[in-house]
Image (tube, rainbow over all chains, first blue to last red; front, top):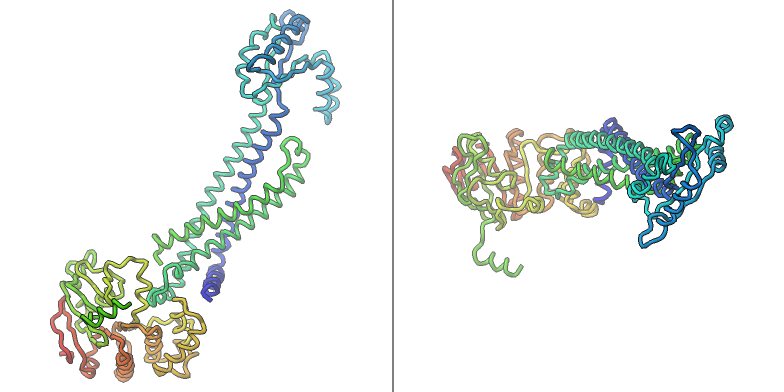
Length: 307
Length: 240
């Protein structure tokens, strides 16, 4: 009975001030969508780091060229480096896990795969101009600095190396861009969230004003505080939950039409967003929306509106 | 429970006691009540009279714990109301019925619904309301008008609905703050008869008024307040 009463009050309350309710729900939905998107992006970056770090290696590029400044590395130089790598594979705390030589022909084949969409570029790149290299997988990718310091001496005419490249460092820039997108989404969701909370306070204020007679009578006859306040707080919670549902649907549509649709060709690069992650967002967003709006509603009633 | 009834027999504690109560509103020059002591026994009918601003409505507010005394103690049903924790107030108020000059009915609810609302919001079931509400509306003389809205009722009838709402929980105390202030003399007398009938059921009635006719006709205890002090307390008094 009391439950029915409270529920009825919530529905009537939301309907009474329907324009404000819609504004509150939309703001809530936008805020929660961005929150969900940035959480998804966060998990995505983690996944990508996992996926890529298995394939990533450190590359020792040999010198290419025929001029006095840049000469091809000699066989002796190559052997010296290979011996150094082999030495680092053994010992109590090996630095190198595995390494592999990549010849000019292999480099060209890889280039052909990488640029399969622009065959002209592949055709115009002579095999001769591609550097030979050692692809090295470190036992711990974080020990790159140590590795770089150690092999620095092979760079130049004496050693025969052109450069030492950490693919992880290259990819880090991509992750940085994703990270700042994620931060941006997070900041906007907070700003929108603050707007949503102000709308919650305003909505409760309007509701409290339009129900001031009922509230006065309820206090007079001794209705408990929670009973008086519950409809107001639940109105805010209902708006929060509806906002979360809309945000969840938006994320599903974004996955279907943007990631699996327009961005599908990039799926190999940005790795697929799993459905389980998207579905996980519903309880997270519903909880966030309901919790934040109920706390705000309660605070507003207790300290600001004083029902 | 045993202890409580034993106490009851031994010292017959008053149902309401103000002990040296002073109430000064914030920013006020002088106190609304200053060092007021008065006791009211169970089943009494007491008028608080005095000019506007004398502090008589402050007493009602203190008894309802809408405000707290600046000094002194307000004791209702053996409980110190002033020091009561705020979460206990709702439950405490269920033992007090209250009637006001402006009726305070909900305009979008019928007479029946107004009374039932008071039961509903303190957790009584609709079954209880269906049994109790018609009974109490009959008692106040509104039998047959249960489904009228307040604007379809006369002032006197609206005040009867308010009395029914105040009495439906069978409170120990009925507080009436100028209940006849908006009514003509004949209707006022009808409301007084109703309050008298409620008083005869054992309910303590405390009424604030400056209607001299009514006080003179009823010949009940009169406590006169002036400038925040009790200047007269007569058992079967007149307005003076």
